Image (tube, rainbow, N blue to C red; front, side, top):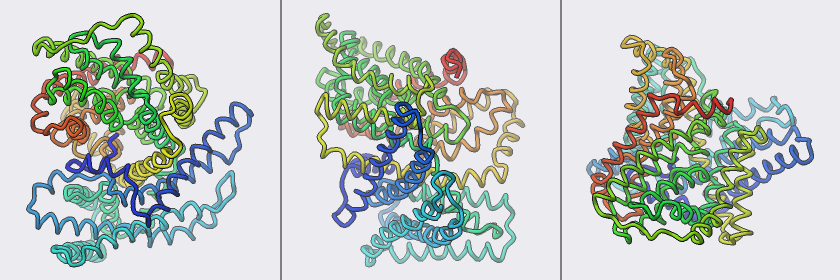
Length: 624
């Protein structure tokens, strides 16, 4: 999962997520970070109460869910302050400077309008929920729904502040005027014209595509397009938008997402990556092309701990790209190996995209996690063979064969980090803990290693990590919330049924759906990035696969693999962009060296698509 803000600004936005804001916004960041810490403590207490005291308080899960809603909205504010919301600027950067300025101000104004609507309708929703009480704690749900107008006020202040600072800038007035004309046109059309539901859906899709193309953050583009749909229909209240947004966020399952992110950050900061790389190097470093193979093996190991593609490419790439270039690898080749290995590593559990996919479908997280191992291994084999062939052709050096004592030391250093995936997967598969509880155990284990055993994490490092986790959580969860409105509209208007009819009209063979999935998900995974593309596309494609006899688990792994590959496909894939920045190479130069690796990954993806056994054998053996 990429935690960056767009294609052209990927690395800058990635850095921004780790940079504190001005003192005026520091209390907001601290509050969001402390809420993540509080959630971690609460889930830890829940695990302790269930397995030690043998008595889980009925209010604990409910409180965690409600605090998660608050941290999602406050984290979205932090992400907005840090310009970390996902956007696509690949079209805008090619426009003349004057046009870019107008569009930038127009987007700022339109985001302000959308969050202003959330303030208005969110405030109307709060008293409407006052009479409803939570089942366990008996508190009024108005305290939960109050997160919408509170966070929206903060985001509105941020957008108005940006507009005020640019008040004399050229293009501002024209951008604001364009937004005003667009709003007026939609309102007038909704009040004076009879717009059919089908036509409103078409306008929704066109609006969403246009807004994403002009670099409006995807969460706000999706939300704004849904508002346009509601206004055009005329028979739906606007209050449905914030109500559906908060409904999409209220999930104990999705609470695993920030906990896995936090665990990955703690492990990366705590020196675990370096120890895993040393372990992989001892295993394959002496083979021709061994450093490249070390990268693939390290990604397979580290992906099983971090759960985040951005963490994978940043952590492993920062260690091994310099090592490969010093050993005689061309920088472009080193970047290509890291990018390809990270694309493969998306399938290794725990995978954040699998957590989101499970929340969108009825699939089991445990089954998804187990289903990803063999497909990832198959893609890794393709990469290892390619690296070996290239190493022989370019006569790349091999490292000295380590002695038995050196191998033993590397293995000893790697044992403790490798226990982390055992804790995560063993707990989930054994039915001992839920995925969310397994994630908090991973956080506790990472704290034990980083703070107590390795002592590479200092207490003062914890708050910045918590704040970064809150910002990433807010960015993803706001997208989940607005996309839940979109999914509701698509389901209500039968969009999946129409797509199924179109495909069945061409062929009833499952091959067509699998090929269409690859052709759609890979490029959109590059343009929209993994999670946004999944949230938009899965509600459309998943309901139709039963008609073609495709196993949902097999299809889910294919979707994750295709989106993971898309993240690292140049020139739009953000993961590839980060790898190029780490290797100090141009995207154009590295892309040429990367072509064989894309071919190898595509061959692996085709294997995953058309050999279901590869995906299903492990879950079936484990009766998941």
